[in-house]
Length: 247
Image (tube, rainbow, N blue to C red; front, side, top):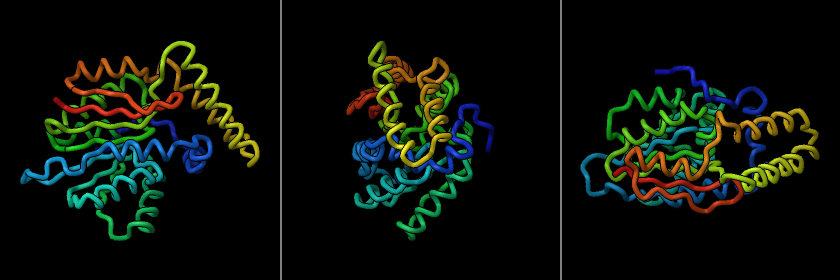
């Protein structure tokens, strides 16, 4: 079922030039790799039911490729589904996968994240992985997504996210200032001044009460939902890698 996602914020030229994020965030791909490296693709190998991985926020497909290759390297022949509400992002990912992994079996789904999760049976997935997506959701929507992630995970299943988990106080604003400075360095020499303006506004909005993901608050909320071993590691500025297991 496809529904409107009130939290979706990558549109128009921001979506079309999404690949520039690797210039604005020099450690963007490194964080994706760290997220992937924390996934145990041997999980559930003793079960009769096949392993099932869900990615929320396909984007341009770079994290999708990393997850797929790690899954294949582990000899895991399970199912991999990736969901994104943006048609252009899905098509970019489809083209990338066709080029670099022509024999891939990733199921790409154009759908609202919450709607997709709500339609899935309880205990469907071994892993739910996402990177730099959930911070785009409004807080109330994101909290519903997190509840559904817990519901659709199998017992012992992993929820992992490489994303913006803000510290509180002055540290939050110092990190934001460093991000904005990186945008100027990335976009001004390329003449992308209008895109620069939109990225700066977008990233300030990320830290607004409507969207911000505070680190300590997130850990406490996930624990209250029933996740265990909730941890945020490998912090750099506003970014960190979350891992949490369904109890």
